[in-house]
Length: 427
Image (tube, one colour):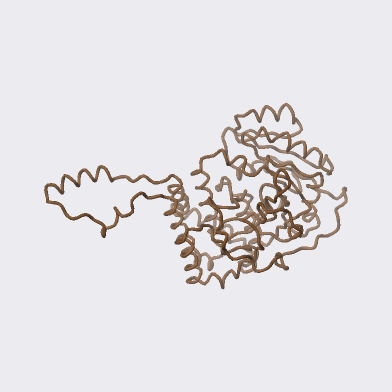
């Protein structure tokens, strides 16, 4: 799953995309419909964590799919639910292969587990448990892969009531923050155009099973969030394509699981994982160019999140007048006991931990990066056009905006990425 917005909305005054529609070179012309006898065997992998209230609607819609039933394998991986989900699956959905974990292993590892348990499918499909799908959803989703137009696809995702978009493909800014295109917009004709997309949303996607294995699947170490951004980016690096398929429609209860988790836990992985995706997927030249801006912006965000109560007490310019020696020693002891610790917000500490997950394991991530770069088949320049919104500024704080503008100019990022190309859409 990717995270479509930061904690706080982008500034409404930011510049709009350069064109009203999507770039012409990203659009694709789909081929003929696929005959039923040509539809391949698929395994649909669904993750569940205390989502019992979603299961009936999800599996009822899957039961109504217009797809040969004997070519569909349903797999549910349960991440140690405590709400009766497992019991309900055994009682009401005995046709679903059920795997129950003793602990929550996360979305990425859970999906990979479901793949390992699949019975030799041609295609893999991943679907959130809080979805319901149209009867032709699966047929339309797999058709471009069957026609060999691409190796992975993603659906048009609508809100549960169908009034607003949740996702019409993926985009990203230069420091790895994923964007679900069209989020919270009303349905419009421009989102009915099939096109290439940087990543398929992990909530509703299909991929060639052999390609999934070759690219390494989802990164277990991401746990959750941005694992689809990372894998989609890797697909392009390794020479494959993913497409947005608007004729494949599903409906989503957005973020129903994450709303129950502590904010600092979400914040840590949402800061860390985009940085890890950048570290793994940019080529050597561009990573050297972008590491400085990535860390500078991360440090500014950390400062914003910390909520340091009294910055002036750290600055020598605001030191109090010296006291007599005896009194000074007494005051010093009192202050050292009182001021040895500073209360800061937990979300700020989460930011520090996130950055240290990379910096504190440098050799490990260099090895992981080498695995990706060793399979490179496509240049960064060819991939950058898929970012659509490379200069999206995720914070409206004045100092942060000034810093990003300054870094963009100093490092020549306008020349590297070109202008933003996402049409007038909310992130």
